[in-house]
Image (cartoon, rainbow, N blue to C red):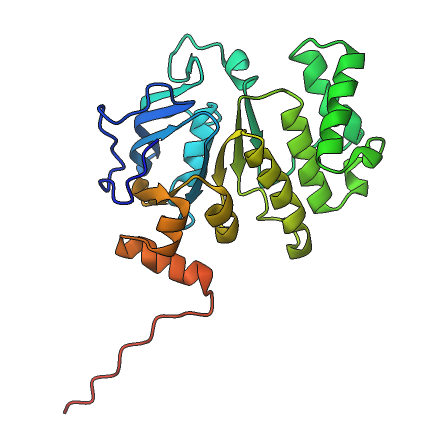
Amino acid sequence: MSTSATPPASGAVSSSTADTNAAVRVRDLHKSYGELEVLRGIDLDVAAGEVVCLIGPSGSGKSTLLRCLNLLETPQSGSISVGGFTVTDPDLDVDAMRRRVGMVFQQFNLFPHLSVLENCTVAQVKVLKRPAAEAKRVALANLERVGLSEKADQRPAQLSGGQQQRVAIARALSMDPDLMLFDEPTSSLDPETVGDVLAIMRGLAADGMTMLVVTHEMSFARDVADRVVFMDGGVVVEQGPAREVIGSPQHQRTRTFLSRVLDPTTVDAPEAPDTRA
């Protein structure tokens, strides 16, 4: 994987250093909404078993990049490969690709009319064609993994936000993904429940799950990620080992962003008025 803390502003990775066995490979990815260019030539590799955190201001393209990886958004140009799938191939079997990629969103997207257990089994039965008994066994094991096996028969509305997000993680894990995508999974949670979700994600990282995480939780990124990628304006500004990027960023734009995130009370001092006659 790339460990350079000062890549070109475009985020380019030379062919000589690219990981040919990357779990995720993105090359020259462009995505626009009308005249608004959200991704402007993104290059990114994620190695199998690696945890990469995407950080940056709102509107920098982080979530759009994540959504392009499983074709929730369709890029205008560039190439994406995930595992053995070329995501940008017009002949891609989208359903087969998505079976290998789990995604957890800001909102939990649970079926309100189904129980917790049913939320974790329905896709296994319908998509993976697992027998109901096996799907239930897998779901209960993953609910146990996130500490919610006792909530299996409850409906989502009976759970807290943090518990619903943990169910969403269990649901994704029940599909046996090779890659987990997390799009700001704690942004809509009460501060008291954020730690529960992050603890689950720490456990997944420790177990070797390949993870790409959009987050504003800098302590999580610093302590858990193998690499941090800072995006701004649709490009990769800086990337490298998590503690280096967060602790000693090389680019002024990264330093400015982190100073505001790590110390939200910091504001730019106003310029002194010109008192000259």
